[in-house]
Length: 323
Picture 1 (cartoon, rainbow, N blue to C red):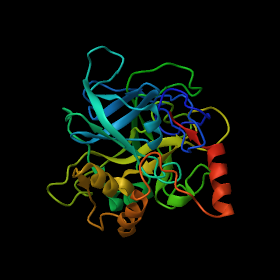
Picture 2 (cartoon, helix red, strand yellow):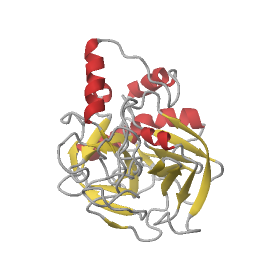
Picture 3 (cartoon, one colour):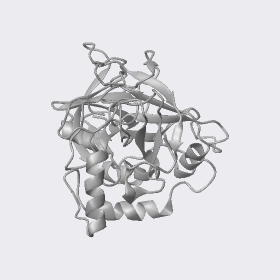
Picture 4 (cartoon, rainbow, N blue to C red):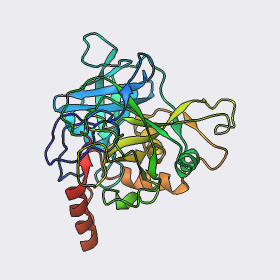
């Protein structure tokens, strides 16, 4: 999530800060993981700070030279990332790498709020594996605890100034993201999920950060499947609830829904962890092919119908981005 205000204020959702999800809406300043603890050196070297002239976000290294972050984080015009650090304000700490190019998911404001950063060279940390659709479905349905990690703000009021990496364990609230007005109708059900709340949440600056689930040999039946934390969600925004900016819970984009798109535009093969069932939704690849034809981060994509227009207006009004 970005840490600086970018237009219309939106409330951050997950760990740190959430960024605005609508082209017509701007983002509030991003906070870090609320209700969490500081990360020990070396614990999450693949969770990176995404920095630009207009703010900061969090991201996850998913290939040696590819970072996954939030779509609205493209608005900060990322110039570089810092990997393998627990405080991006410490001089000369971590692995600082320039960003070659940034591309947000087509119509990210209405669909999947994600973006990818191609780095100028490979990073030192090992990239994080991504849960397949069947594993994500199982973990979210069973309400496994999630670990959110980010460089966002840590105060529920988002009135602090943080550059350190924090983590927290949060519960799954709604595995299909169908119960909150801030959920994106175009990707329901299963395109997003909500998690956190009761004082533990992502905040401004956490936008784009990861939500991990822990896996075991039960999840990955193949010998080559890595065991341990895998990426299941990306911090996007806060729930459409009144009250404090951070702490009520947030909305996350499911990483498995955009892996085919990521591999297509980056030409990189991502590591996946399965569960013995069908890997991903068979309709996703076709849908992504159609979406990819609409362009990059500037593609708004016209929507027809009065209902759709009213829906966009409502989402723009209630979405609280974690930037």
